[in-house]
Length: 242
Length: 242
Image 1 (cartoon, one colour):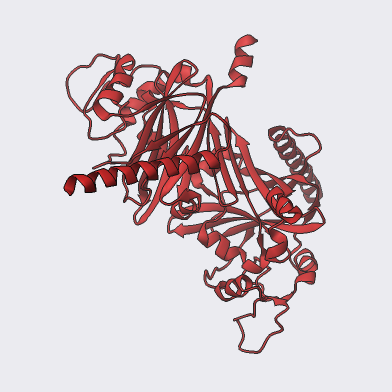
Image 2 (cartoon, chains in turn orange, red):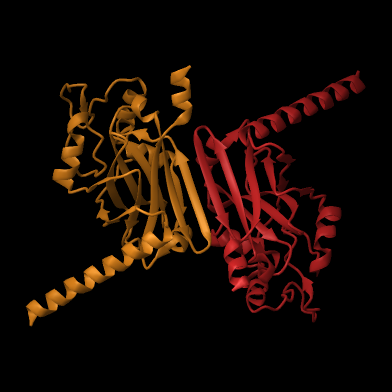
């Protein structure tokens, strides 16, 4: 009987997933778009100043040393790349992708345009929804974070970061699009480098920001579908040609 | 000497205005777009519940009675249309436009696509920037409001309302676009009717919302250029044809 109940539950989950997938595809009607269902990760703690040192170093063109420890560090190590605060990992830029895949089971998707379907938007802040996106020969990290900047007023922040240097990041433009209930919200910007740290991008508010009421208007049954597209930025290409 | 100083000041103002106009045109490069410089109006007080009664009536398809007074009102009177709170005016929908033009000196612009250039974004909340937009045979009201929903954290809210009924408003789509510093933010929605009251649209957050840091990123020398476009909504046209 228990076995039957579990099987039935699994079938229901599959039907629900399939239905969500169908709805997300319907919203973003472009043919051939990949829909990825992303489950939340509850973050236990946040320290807004965690990456201040790392960011300053990245701006100066130096890979950041970690300020968690007193020891002298290899400047090639990246302490900030993993957006999950509780993770003490640090490593070279080249091994960030395997770390995120293996240690945190973060999915990696291929394709120029994908739909990110974040589930369980009602979960309390702080919560993260994270995915990697492989596109145009690079890997990008999409982070959607629910956070209370003002106590009692959770907001959603979405940004895209290149797993690469700030100079490489300048060559791209990313677009996040929400489309539901006769409303459409589009955010386009140059991705930041993971060396600049996701925490500081979000605390600066230099990303797509949604208050709870807007997030509800764009959500369907507790899930938020975000259309993602990455292109090479024409301005930079033009400058490079000149 | 005083005369000379005043003349010189006026010339400087004109040069500054011309320069802002030029910059706004450069940002929104489409040819033939009209740029309108909009000065702020400092609002003395806000009462978030002011239009609750009006909104309920509008949803029920009845023109709202005014709740400021105890007297019996003509149901054709519109108490909420004037977004300036301190104004006790009420009148029929047909005379809202002359009231806004004559009493509040709100400009009216023609054209399908215009650029709204709000000046002095640094002014403390609450502040409004308002303009009327005549397009597709109707008049629309664009309201940009700086307001502190959370004390000490001013935000900017932008919305477009039709000076007409909710049924008429359903036939249109408006788009607000910010474009600067390699960032682009677009909001598209169906305009609300002025009968639904701008205060409730803003308190619901069902509009373009900008925090201070994003507003600064999109501003140029204290002015924010918002590209506005209005179209007839295709969904409704298609439904009407069916």
